[in-house]
Image 1 (cartoon, rainbow, N blue to C red):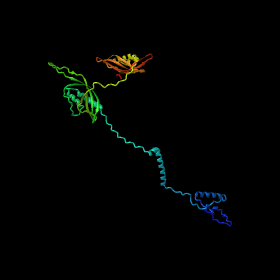
Image 2: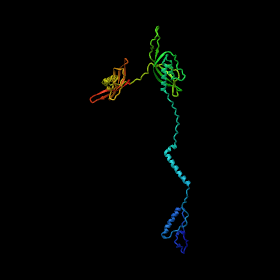
Image 3: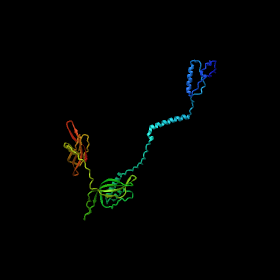
Image 4: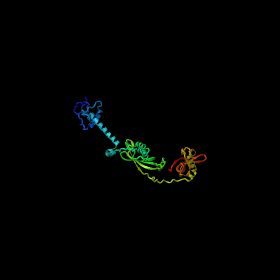
Length: 368
């Protein structure tokens, strides 16, 4: 059974010959620490094991139990521990992503955006100008022999049931030579005012002389520009004239032009290229420019009826390179009159194996 044999004493107080270890008779007191007690028992067994190697030492007393008590963990405790570890790692990862500073000092909430203003549709200026121009031509062009024709033209741009006479008494004769629509001044509720400039020529009917049945030809008056402010309104995408217009004056002169910088000229190049430019303008009026233009250039000739009278002046701008620009003043004969006009001419140096010459590459009217 592994239990120590009963011990007895001899005459001289010797140990029993049964081979039981000495600690069975008088076991030392067990230390408080179970680990130290186990170590002491192991050393004692080792010391007595050499004399009695064939006998298994018996413990001094039945063991009182293991140094610790194993306990079975419940499933709830395991889940709580794992959940806590996962929560800690989640917080660590979240702090790395968002930044600890954002937790300590929260960012300021963005200011609420102001509601975007609803963009209003642009006023149909082109449509208003077109309607106003049609109205101005019909309104200022009258002939007492064609009153119904004028009313029909005006009715096409007026609201229904509007007065198509527009205040005309049905007398007189006036021709409209040109119409030029201008600025559109927008008002409220879809209304606007369109400035139209009209070129007029009044016609004065002459009365027949005494004793003659046939009247002389009408006398034409000088043509003149007048301004007309036409009130219009936009409704459902369409433009209509809302009422009678008003005549306004036209300035006698245009606005003052700004000062332009003076262009420096190249006198030497001007002298060298004057003959080529003169030859070009002669061919320009004759209708054949291919022979006097640079290779690859395309300059359409002038229409018939324009006669070249001569090159009044030519000056090449200062600069460098094989392409230069200059200003030409040309005299033309047109409709029985002489008129001088200004051109900007681009010339190019064309080189061959043994020589080079300047030819016109492009031409534009005006001084700019």
